Amino acid sequence: MTTVDSRASSSTDAHEGQSFLQTFAHQPRTVWITAFAAVVAFMGIGLVDPILHSIAEALDAPPNKLTLLFGVYVGVQCVAMLITGWSASRFGPKRTLVTGLTLIILAAALSVFASDIDQLIIYRVLWGLGNALFLATALAFIVSEAEGSHHGAIMLYEAALGVGLAVGPLIGALLGEWTWRAPFGGTAILMLIGAILCAAMLPKDGPASSRTKVRLVDPILALRNRTLLITSIGSAFYTGALFTVIAWAPIAMGLRPIYAGLIFFGWGLLTAIAGVFIAPKLARAVGQRGGVMIAIGTYAVAMIVAGIGTAEHQVWLIGVAVILSGLPSGVLNTLFTGVAMSSGDGSTPRSVSSAGYSFPRWAGAAIAAVLVSYLAEWFGSVAAPWWFATAYCIVALITVSFVRVASAADHHVDPQDALVGAEEY
Image (cartoon, rainbow, N blue to C red; front, side, top):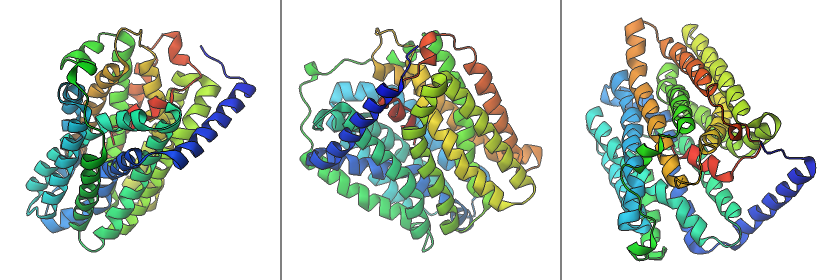
């Protein structure tokens, strides 16, 4: 266990502040270009939430089709996580990154012209694959090209994450007030700009011999580590609750794009703030595993509040629960990853372990996103998905309690944990 006294903490804070300022003052164009593209990529989920109700009305789409927009998006990322490391190793990180951006542009542009919900679902599959390929390599570019410390470069990536999560719902809401097609068109244009800049200005890939070899099966083999496997199962159940919020809250609230967008803006903002600032402080106080268990319990309370709001037809209560759920969500995105990565013994590259951890986590998200509408139908209650989300949190709590390694209670958070945890967006 690592302890942090007040002097060490103050020294760290001062170093982080200096890195932050240096990061924003002295970075080359390649870093800013990649960060810009990352902002647009992180807008992917929040963009759709405010216009979900409008899509349902315009395309006469039932709830089980609407939730597939999230289920297939994260489901394909679940599978793609197994190939992104291999792709970057085999074809080079720049080719992988630009291919991902191209797929996002194509998917967003095609979504503008979708004539029914099934077409939109297919394009969302393409979008998820592109997002996975891009995000798997974006951080590597920022770290390799950034001037100054790696910590400062990571902070820049975190800033891109925060802006994307918060701005995505706002853009979706503002453009969605005009037509549900507009947010997709706006994303395609922004990402096209980013793709052109990345293709023209990012450095060429080096020879294949200079890249670490990664096999397709390596992420799965990493799950032979007991702590990594247990943590990834617990995270899968928590992420199921997270995607209940993302996929079901817009349907349960049934709000105009602008109002739904403001709610998810608050959610995204609190998620980003908590992951970067609150999670490390909580870990210093109670350790990473302790912070995970507190945050899961808090998330379960938020799910109960959302369920009560839905059952009592109090939309404002659902909105409050969604916004406040961003706090434990941000903490969990960071600390859950920290507990998982504490299982490493040096024999498996961190990128491979994080890919193995993310595979079951995203599988849980995909299953939950698809199930929410059916749970409401099977149990005859629009509040049913929230009660199941509460149960997911309870299972996650029980699972995490089986993590016994001392390093899981570490009081220090690696800055990269916030990034691995946030890549699901």
